[in-house]
Length: 302
Image 1 (tube, rainbow, N blue to C red):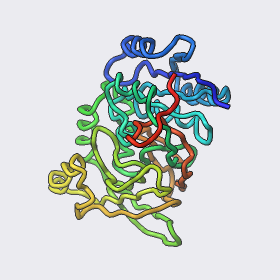
Image 2 (cartoon, rainbow, N blue to C red):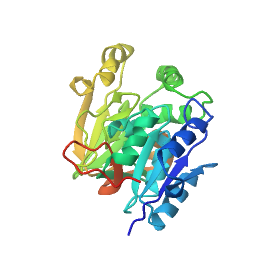
Image 3 (cartoon, helix red, strand yellow):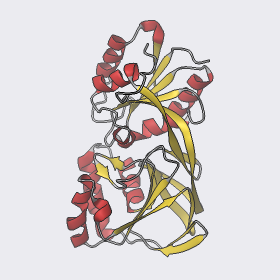
Image 4 (tube, one colour):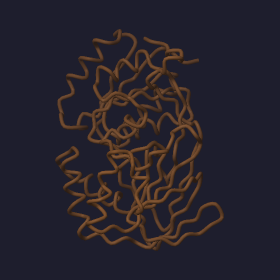
């Protein structure tokens, strides 16, 4: 049986501000001292370990305070458990939070923790990692790898890196196996989406739903500078699916093959595997705290 306890896991270096005292004060103002605890991460993997530990102790929820990487780590420790994921977005893109309609403002996100509903969403698996918003190979994976080494965070440096990399990027030939078919592609990018967007309002899969048991495979053809100028704004108006350079397929499993190392990303975080990338979906494998619709019953508040 779940207890009423909450664990907040804070990434102290996420987002623009390294000083997290403001969010710590907000948490203390919202919750009783005995009903929660705060843990700070200090290294990659800490958030997953802390989340898994809380689930084993039957905590009601674990709240990720950080960006997409922190949210991915925390959620990865909760897959298949009854302990729910909460999110206070403090990163650059906040893709999963936006995909679940979780408010970006901390005080409103905390209200969801207190009074929101609980729903189960699907979880994607890509090689050795889980993803909750998007995974993929191609240009976005390359930009994600470069961005991971940047010392300046936020949308502006991301777009600056993307512009620089676009000049020298050459799509790689891939073999994609799905639904008893084998496709031979050389896409600009191939994104597998569980939710609609990458983050920062960039909607790559307008029809993706996180709880329908289906992943959206988005194939973007090689692009010219003119293509980018014409179609890139559609990412931010939710109309990219109308562009001639993109196509979609519903999938539950697929394999991507190419010789040597495959660079991919999970929720924007760069990863690698050798020769074959297997992607699949675990339906309704993660409980999350989300804004409660008017007709639903609120989650138990602390």
